[in-house]
Length: 288
Image (cartoon, rainbow, N blue to C red; front, side, top):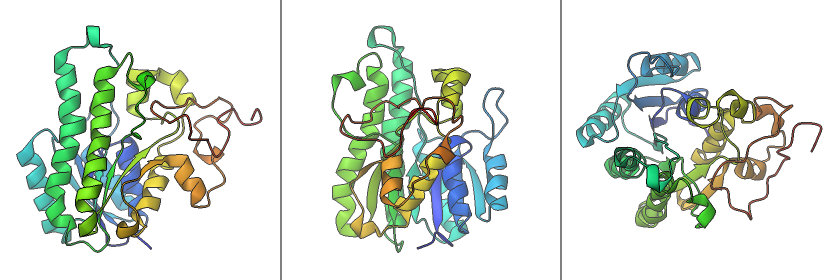
């Protein structure tokens, strides 16, 4: 299968994983609605919806840059209507927009909790809800959340309970919506990276350059997302995929291609279940 002519609505697509998923689809000739807040250049964040649109079109796709706040019901509704009007429908929704704050409960500012809940959990549910009428008319409709497996262990919540609740909320939408939409043939899945991914969030909020060097590039998540999108929606729903495991099952054997720095051990991400073995060594190349 190919994504040629398919229309993707991707939240948070001005940079990072969202943009990379759009670029991967664009190489097939897909249409990509870039739904994000960054219209003007940001001093600490690379990229805007317009630079993303330019990159999508250079990659071979058609782009529609849209200023969208996933916390705003009307903003999302108007953006989806504009996407369908421009491209004739919506085939794939990618709920990528997310906020992170790794603060313990005692110290968390409740405004930060509210922000994470509004963007991660509520935003995901809202975008999914509003996309359903369009997806019903698509030939192979998919909803994908960039959210973790529902592995309920204390270690995934301690020290950052607020963030974990907000991310697991996205995955709970997957769990419920997969069952709700299965009779309609709309696939709903989650995808999560095994390792940290070299994005602005990692660089600015989590570990700086040291963690960036211990990360994989966003392309691994994009390649895994593509593998999901080309699968028949009626046969692939309700899954909580780990990026490298999915790609290994699809026949990928070279995971070193995704490393930022092959000479550095990879940092395993939050939320990866203990019973999920890595298909390739996370040690520095030559050590594993």
